Amino acid sequence: MTFIDHLSAGLLCGSFVAGTFVALDAGIGSKKGFLVEVCAIGLAVLFGTLLLVFSANGPAASFIQRFGAVCKVVFVAFALVSIVKLSAHYLRRETIAVSDLFRAMVGAAALMFATTSIDRLFYESEVSVSSQLSNVAMLTISAAIFLATPWAMRSSRRERNGAIVFSAGLLMVVFCRLLSSVIEHSSWITTMGLARRLPTGQANLLFASTYTLALMFAVPSMRYWARNTFWWAKLSLTISAWRFSWGKPQPLMRMSTAMKLWEFRDGVCFLNHGSFGAVPTLVHLTQRRLHDRINAQPMDELVRHFEPRWRQTQQHLAAWLGTKAENIALCENATAGMNEIASWFPLESHDEVLLNDHEYGAVRRIWQRRCERSGATLQTAVLPRDLHDPQQIVDAIIDRCNDRTRLVVVSHITSPTAIVMPVASICQRLNERGIASCIDGPHALLQEDLNLQRLGCDFYTASCHKWLCAPLGSGFTYIAPKWHSQVEPARLSWGLLQPKLPSRWDDELLWTGSRDSTPLLCIPAAIRFFEYFSHEQLDQRNHALASFAREQLLQLPGTQPVTPPGRRWFAWMVAVWLPAGDHANLQKVLWEKYQIEVPISRLEDRFLIRVSCHLYNTPKDFDLLMRALRKELLAK
Image (cartoon, rainbow, N blue to C red; front, top):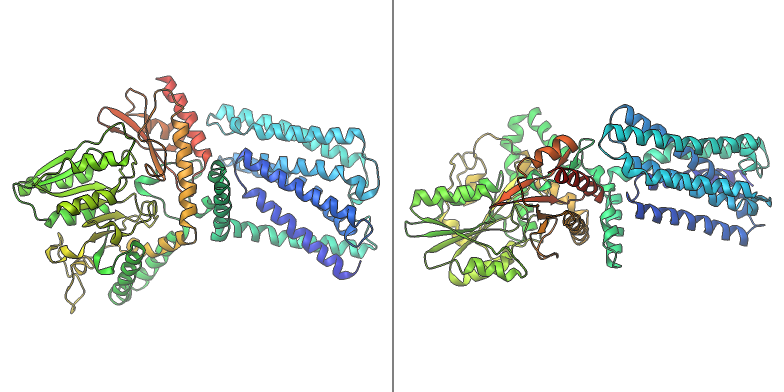
């Protein structure tokens, strides 16, 4: 072989193995997904075998020999490095990703077994029965280690220590098997083809050097690319969506690579995105850069550049919401927007404002005070407990309206029960009767394909820091054009910096005094973050995960569904009635004992558990939740 042949062989082998490392390290985090990985490795080996059979005497034979040998050595090395990585995490008391180690070990064992089986094709030598049996034993032991994952992931320190000792013992058996192979074959490396077919020592050194360099540079670069770029997460989501289209929804939930796009504390199972959201790393960096600019020159940023950035953000958000920029105003959150509307909405002593019994408590307080000050009456529509058709919700609200009803306030997605309300039908019926509609939509952004122009509501408020994942303190208020002339802002300041004067209702909310406006200015960054993904695929994946969580929770004795299954009832957040009893302290217990963050709320005489499913959540989170719930509910 020529100099170029050895050089290219080393680079190709090193790059391929590095890519395989990354695939194993950032692969699908489930037993079923791992079987797919093992099958893929087996197919690759089979393809190489067929290629060798058809070109045994051709130029590809020498390359395939080295290729199989390299895979055999490096995959075993990768498994051993995983042990060291696991030990380091354990000594630092960090979260132990045991499943990654088991996946690597089974992959290494499967490849060892396959490549040993085709040694006869490589070198025309017999493979002994004892060698085959030992490889089968190695594969079996590695599979046993993999199956020990649930045990090793338990929260009890005693059980976790026992699992680590057990796993270490099995790994020692594997290591001794490899060591015995080295001792038995003194020319092990040579026999495997790394040097046997090479014509000179210089060529051997060249191949080893180029392979090593390729591996050194490719592994960190590929790993960084897989964990810190949108492309890898987008590819994972696309593959998951393809599986969903093939009628297999469960594997759709198994994508975990995108979790690297968020920064969560190790050991925390976060199932409460619906409360405050979580800011992706790239959006957080955008806010940090804005802070740095302001701190470097406050006058330049706040006086000269603030208003243009505000207008750009307003236009970007309005286009994403399907409306015009003059119809929305940026504000801190949905609560601030609701207060703005309530401060001026025209009410008289004989008027009524209608809410329903699933509304958010803060919204009820806002309109209760407004009604008390104006002399109006706050009414409540009771939604049916046994829901089987969204029209039941529409009828329950519309039938409660009368000639004195001036405004109906309804959540797009309810906070305690996570029900997707039929707001389009409700707004249409209210418009026909001349009643104003106000939609409270902090949970709807990104979960629902929102177009305010088509929705036809009079008012809409939402928080961008929840499901859209903008920084805390970002939201908007939408007011339909027919109400613009009646708007009277609750807070007065300059509105616009002098010498300019406010000319539109949203101008009054631009400059309300000195404040940190960087969360609002980061809204376009949050929108761009999710534009890297297909919304349809993201919705399919997260809803499939929510459906999986609902099925798991309903397996607990005494639990009951809030709604029937299906996308028209819930999106990425789902709630389930807990068994009868007092669960007021359950949320605290789940956090303090298990580091699981999930809300437990009370509606009338029953408690609910509500779980949120975003891009960083996986079924592993719900496995942890189910084990904790079974233990705590059984104790009661």
